[in-house]
Image (cartoon, rainbow, N blue to C red):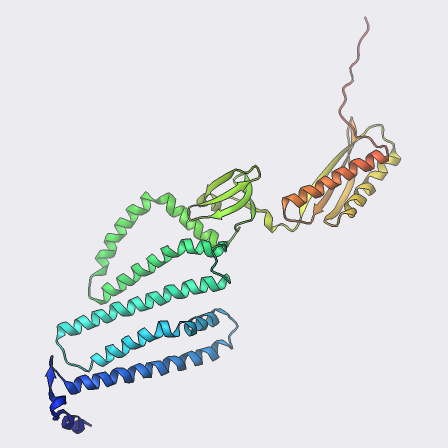
Length: 362
């Protein structure tokens, strides 16, 4: 092989030398470029096929999403990488100065890092959008991650910059120490914002509520209209909008009424003191029958609970099988109106406090 190479080099065209390399060297390097490029292309296709067969046997769906991503981005993602690797290894065959060699190695490290970072960022975005089925702006989960995504990208690029500088021989530790001191100063100056940002990450990951949920937090009750990096916006029943910092939400108890399958309602009746025993016995079945008339109401109990000086007190409990407040209010109104009708029908009067005044005659 070596003798064959030497014989070809004797040909006048291949013997010509440019920048310390003969035309034969350039020809061989070009052939190596195409050989390595096609070998990498075959390897890429083969690896994808094998990976696709393996992930079909797994129970998780995340690996399937990654395979679909690389299949969809195969031309856009792998072709530049394959061409770059083929060029890099084919150039190794040529002779050049140490300065040029260092320049090529530096270019290779920087370009490889950029390729990897772009793929990582694109994969993260693809997985987020695929998980929530859509990348529509109306999707609250995607909206929240879109707000956080620029910060994630900045962190990834900063880490990649440190990686490149470290591989190029720079002392990264002193730079990190300087950034650490500056970071502490920035953190102290923006403590409130960082606290709200961390709380935003907690809200997004834990999802105690979503846009459209009816919640109660810090004594404020209303519908969530927006979840932002710094605050959450709540529209109250009166129509006004309340803005609450994220840190305050994560530091206190939160009630999410959307999670309710049913709501409890208590009914207290004070019956007039002159009501007969026969009519008093009618009240529990009246309440039960009224609750049974509405399919959204679940009757629990009704008892003669207290005997007061001015009335006989009955307490009833029922559940409204709905999570929204309007349905609950309508059901409670239905019960109250029907109770009034039935009491009037049976001539049962409600009791009320009375004051007896005695006038002494002189």
